[in-house]
Amino acid sequence: MAEKACLVDVTKCIACRGCQIACKSWNQLPAEKTTFDGTYENPPDLSASTVTKIKFREVAEGGKVKWLFRKVQCFHCTDAGCVKACPVPGALTKLEDGTVYLDQNKCTGCKYCIMNCPFEIPRWDATKGKAFKCNFCYDRTSNGLPPACQKICVGGAIQYGDRDTLIAYAKTRPGFLYGEKELGGLHWMYLLPVDDPELYFLPKEPKLPKSLIVWKDILKPIGLILGGGSILAWLGYHFLLMPQKEKLTKEAEKHS
Image (cartoon, rainbow, N blue to C red; front, side):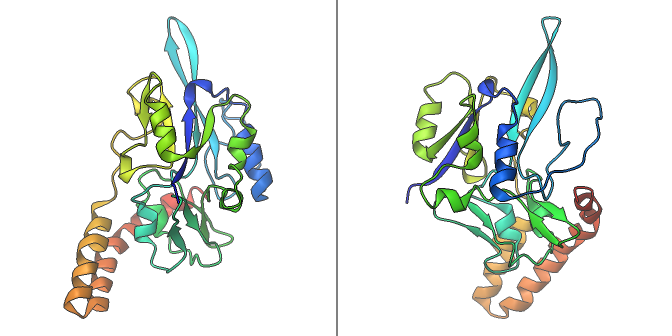
């Protein structure tokens, strides 16, 4: 199966936020009560009930204010930190088409996906005791339909299709392609007008936490090979990942 992806041309985004509405409608996510805080950006951040949103940035250009917009959601990374960190089999799965799928029925609420995502995407629901994120409308894409957000995009900012085809197209266009190689390749990519991802709230070089790499890619495989793998894996998991939990739990709960 060819890997699927979305390519977002940020210069075509008009911040109509139709994608936000379509996402909530298709996934039956509730609205959030918010207050005005001096920006048109609403809601202010991702949450368990808002798994995609448009971020706003105001910049000065030629003595005038210019708006920059970017759609935010799970990036569905090839080298997905959330999948590596999740201790529950089948709770977070990297599917053949590139989707990183979170099964709510299997999520135990350990928060390791939240702590190990370099993009800070999964959000915690304290009421349900589970993490939430975009599942790339897998119930649609697996049946030959595009994601709901892409379907509704009136400005044509979002394209959906085979990942290789979208990359080839992006390289014919002026601008900077973000997502081709980051973390092994993202399945939500962005065509930016300038080579400055941070201007659009994107890290220049997203990286997985070193503690996760040491535990998952080094200690755990060695332990399984040498025997006593469960003991070594447990030690690596709890001495490398657990120290992060106390430090980051409060931050995660801010998004609840």
